[in-house]
Image 1 (cartoon, helix red, strand yellow):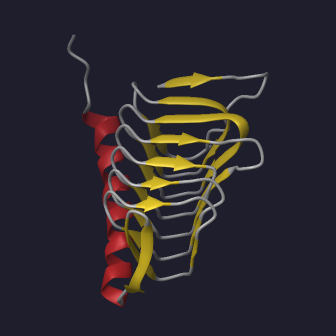
Image 2: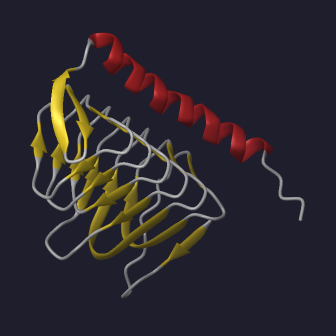
Amino acid sequence: MTIYSFNNISPSLPDGDFWVSETAQVIGNVKIGNNTGIWFGAILRGDNEPISIDEDTNIQENTVIHVDKGACVKIGSGCTIGHKSIIHGCTIGNNTLIGMGSIILNHASIGNNCLVGAGSLVTEGKIFPDNSLIIGSPAKFKRELTNDEVEQNKWSAQHYINNFKEFKKSLKKII
């Protein structure tokens, strides 16, 4: 794992179990919760404002999380942030799944128990309530999630907790 201090501010890592892959980069004012996995190639750059990631959340491969002045990032517990997403100066509620390749821009707010479809673009300042299915570019509210879909979000987060624990135990660099 590559952890950097920036302007004399170092990331806050949990006392409990967590995993940051060797190729991920965590920079500056970043707080990572217990049971959180930061996967290969992810970049969390807390240089202008704080980034806060609650427990039981996974940040998948090649995701970029960044902030602007006046636009911090808050990601709730039990979230899945899909591969190659861009999370920028926004708030994401608990048990929310952000589909791979999605972009969430400054001051946007995604509620609890939401699903943002793969490749969606959530524009600046857009606010979505709890239990929303959010899709498109620009992203729009499609409908409320079913209870089964909310449970699938929770399953995804738990699946990635299990994955990072297996990677911590079994991943061995050979070259």
